[in-house]
Image (cartoon, rainbow over all chains, first blue to last red; front, top):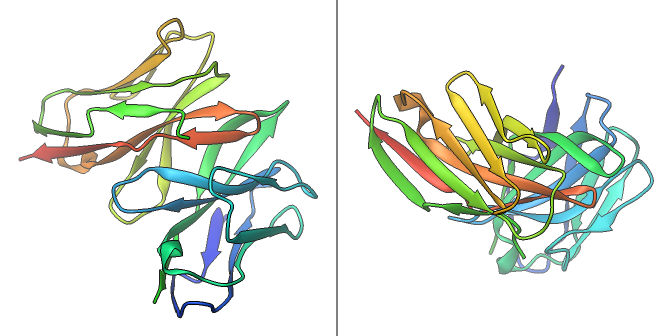
Length: 115
Length: 109
């Protein structure tokens, strides 16, 4: 089992460029999440998908869009990158039931720099 | 806004000593989790304690939960160099988990 995989591992963008971060999990989890982590900070939730076919905003959704492509895959898109989006992005998945979230499994992260 | 807040922000102790870090949160929860993050890596789940539990153990880890005070503590006994990492508490709220800013733990040789 690969667990949670993310691509790419590193990316440098210029202001205004767009890109999509990919995430996939092979644990048959129903819930998936995108976080960003800035230096010295905890993780802040960008968007999440409690189940296939649903997505919801987290704490910091502005400037991002997501797609839950199927049960395995959850992508994060930056339509017009800004320097404030320079961060490390983590994808996670978990089994959840009755709106209660269990243990989260994290990908290795994508380091994004926007110039 | 962040639900959980860890205290202290940073902690340095000698190898072999015990390390205690605390987490306070604001609203009612179903469960509280602790995670570890080694520098530059993804988070790794350590332990989950449900709201109806008061204490839980896993190896050298001991977690307590006081729902009346809305607080939790993580105790790492007999610390090792490999325990050097950041530790985060996370509380659940409506299908999602909200993380605190973490405690940076440094184990001195």
